[in-house]
Length: 257
Image 1 (cartoon, rainbow, N blue to C red):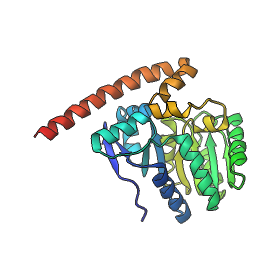
Image 2: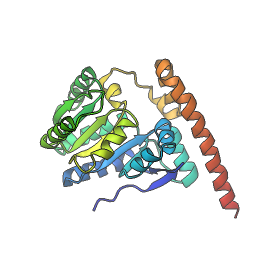
Image 3: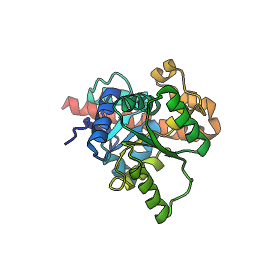
């Protein structure tokens, strides 16, 4: 039986108090034991989206690990629950660290999602950094719901590939819904990594490390994709701050009793 990191409720969404090392160890152990598992990362946008969608929340809460992707999410865990996490667990960072460890242990990977040119560049970039990595297969999303036959064929390709880890890059919340719907069909560990495909492929700019650590990576991304992201961040960041304030007040009142 695999022991996964403890979860804590943030606005009704169960988020794992975990580190890169702990998450990687859990994923590789599950992959080597042939135990299916579902893993995702939630930054502010994903956390707020799940908290406001009962169906999505139920799905996400069933995941084995829900890592704190954004610095604000990590900070909320530390402040409200005293978890003392040293850093957040970013999708791109985890993906790169994980493939290096996977290569060393002979665990193969499969890449599914994004556009064809992105996934092609991604597998080349990963092999360029980790030459002994076993990429057992890679394919883009077709950006529409799969038919029953298409879905069965995809599952068969993934399971027959021999991969121990499936990286799913469909974006939140599509990737979480995909992983949940296939939790009893896909044998490799499913790891939802969102924009990590673009960042590691080099098709989107990664924020400098000091920006990532400052908690303002969202602002960096907003500056580079204002038309796509302004409404998302205006809405979800505001809701996050309001919900966090409510949680802080509730916690303070509980401590006074």
